[in-house]
Length: 72
Image (cartoon, rainbow, N blue to C red; front, side, top):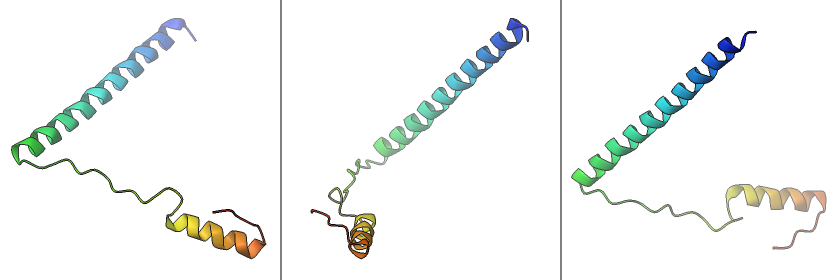
């Protein structure tokens, strides 16, 4: 293929990437303005301690059934 075709594709991809970045920023900015106008506070996520979720419990039970020792 001629180089001109590939360079056009590269330019198109760059333009799409930049448009996506602009769209994401405008969405964030709109949300930020809404929260400030309505005096909504930022909520800090309350995550469970690492390794204490439901998946960890299933993993420990599976290990016991298979006879593997697990330290925790």
